[in-house]
Image 1: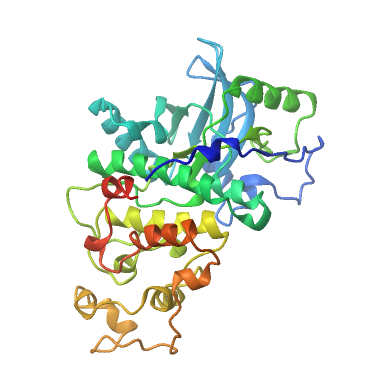
Image 2: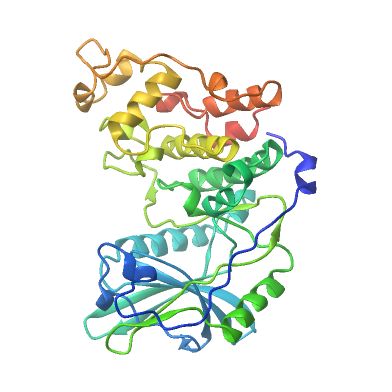
Length: 388
């Protein structure tokens, strides 16, 4: 797959609104406090200007999730900026797995080009507390996620030349993982971030100065804990250079698995149907992501597995009968002869769903090479990199 030169000429400006400084009202929930299962006792009470591991001083909160908060820090050993991910002290399985996988990959000292498109840890450490510990990971700072990127674009989509560049980078990163015996299992738009532009120091310094001059809303909780508001980056970005992140759900690919993985819009058919799966689930994910980047819409159902399967049948045709026999769960959706039990569907090709022609049609063929019902018929990342 060739990278188009024209992609480098396309620029777009990302400007995110600044927030005025105030203390959030007692009843007003912000950030991680809005999460359904939020428990303040699980989060480490990070404060700005706090020093971690005797070198990382927090400057600005960058984000949060169900199991961590992320902060922009100044590394006082070399005066560079770093991103610090501070995990909760329970439900630490994903953080532990990410550390395990990153340490394994680092030990291989690979020279694979795809290593450039995977977020690696600069440092890891633990914060010990009386009833447990908080795992911390340090990374090079990155830009916004691809989910944020397309939400800022007209039509919530990218132009074909930019999609081609992003796809090439992601394929290279996936090939690096697979050739190292690792399956990501959770590749989606919000687990892919942009590499920052060359002037990243200036971008990050502006962010720190903006927070210093006008801090975002804060909410005091209990026991000295303050929930800070995350601040988003403001920078010019042209070509999308995507970085794969969040290896907390990754597995080692030497065996086949059967446990449920992937968010429903990205879930491969063999996973939905309770069959054994392998590294080809990542290829399925990438096919869906490429479609989302190009079209600005979900390809298959987003609410439940029934809708997802119905959409697959509509756009990919019915699954082969021999494929369905690989597991018993298919009988929830298909009869003994492999016929769909749900509402009859009118077949529609992906090309009919997307107005195009020429390069667009060729790219749809490329996407379809990743979206076969049968995992073994999906092209590998290495083969897709050689695709015309």
